[in-house]
Image (cartoon, rainbow, N blue to C red):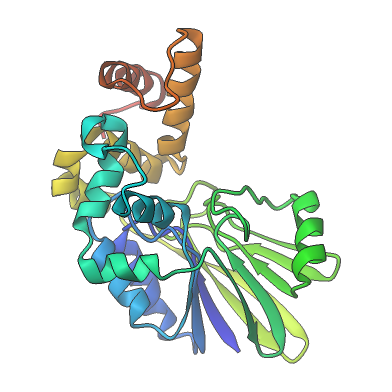
Length: 285
């Protein structure tokens, strides 16, 4: 059995579509989608339409969880603060059917394929934002004790790995939407044949210039320009500038004794963005 494994698409329809079409020539039996399909762009509906029409399994990521909470009014008004413009635009792009679809997703799932028990989670089975890296052995031990699966699949970190530990496989296929390690855009092929398990990373090259114009000319860029620029530089540098910028702002707020627990003041956000650009962006594109 051959299984295509995708994680962290982040509305990057162009690259996802290319990778998905590639799988049609790889004798794939079923698909697994590990969350974070939407936001950071404007084509979430197209991404979700492919996932919904595909034979396989899908779970919720932290981006979907945030949109669900916002839809149910558990989040503050995203329209007031620049820090939320990215999420607000991603939410407003989705049609009602796709909002209902992401609301139906579980945050984790245990499945059996070809007699192998597989645990699917975006972060960890209990926390969509949980951190699992290639050497998270304490997490592996806890998962083995609690679930005793043959294979554990993760997303969230945007970094690919395959660790064989205590006769179990712990795998992250990397990100097909916004990779942050040394490879280009990527997904995985999991093959289960009798008692043999193999995992292969598939790299997908895509022209940055085309992606640049795809985003730069979009309504997303007009609605959330700072976030669009962070996203484009993330693709260009293969570094998660979105998360790195928030950590940068958090550190600066701490130094200035500014409370940003509930929200980042817009002036402070804009000033720190200019400072971040000068420090980390080396050119205009």
